[in-house]
Image 1 (cartoon, rainbow, N blue to C red):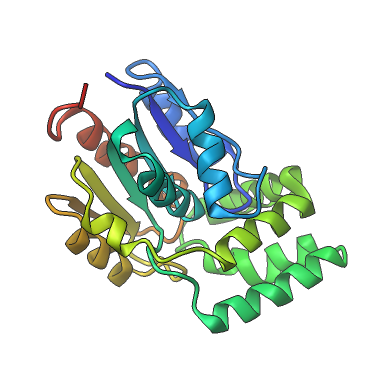
Image 2 (image 1 turned 30 degrees about the vertical axis):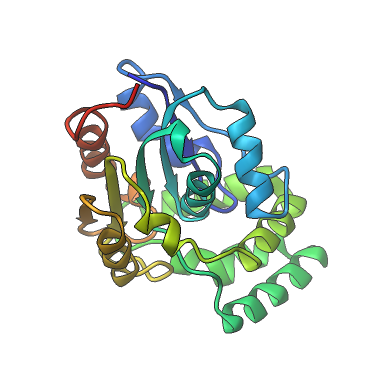
Length: 236
């Protein structure tokens, strides 16, 4: 079994996948790169590829999924299977680009906490008993990464390319997964990716928003286990 590379979302670290790492580490080598070194998707993808094994399974959530699609564009022969979670294959819409610029200006002015608390975090999660604890974890991850990471990641997201054609050409075991109540990357984006990737599995996680890995960890882990160990044959 090839190793698994997990790519976290914007302003998140390996803790985004804490339940999945705990469940999978005894069965497969798991790596979680930090996506903060570049301000372009191409640069982020190249950086991960430089440190990844020769062949690997690849899963990304949100911005991590966008980086995963860029990696698939750059080195499809190295990726044995692909999971795209709560993400978007399209380039960024002009109105979102404009809003992102306002966020970057505010963060440069020392307002990272306000942007995360008031404008981003409320859109992350569905209602649930663990919502407050998960939001606190998101805030801690963002603070640990800091304003410079926010700016670089924002630029990479703002200027990214549309990768729908890359998904049309994909030929590997693929999982497309999202929370039913994801407002940032809605279900229809995932039905689109499912339609683009021939033979992919679509999994909608009930009672979850943008971060099903934390909101509904058991269900999300089960879907990843099926994708890793029960879907097709690993490439060699």
